[in-house]
Length: 126
Image (cartoon, rainbow, N blue to C red; front, side):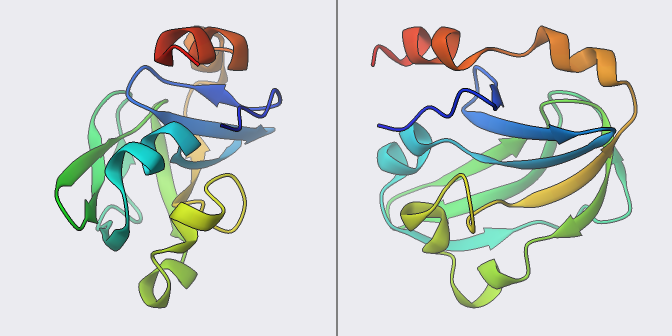
């Protein structure tokens, strides 16, 4: 499994790539493996401020539907449009082309409360 060290992680299996006060958010390699083949992603929170740990969308796999939790409080500014036609990008490239949303972070200090790659790896027992 892949755990890029430049990312921050949540206990709910989301990752965050921070660039200033902007963040790209997706689900981890571990999460996509647990879910299996992803067939649909539903995110209707563009333009909304979503608080830390609140649901910003759902991801549907062949066998289950899972909520997506916001790792930091922020306004969702963009949804990865490529996922509309190719939700399987989350399975094939969860940290690259499979990102889910871009958000403007309300409080950058919330990043400090997220897990490092090493801490997330320990959490999932990898």
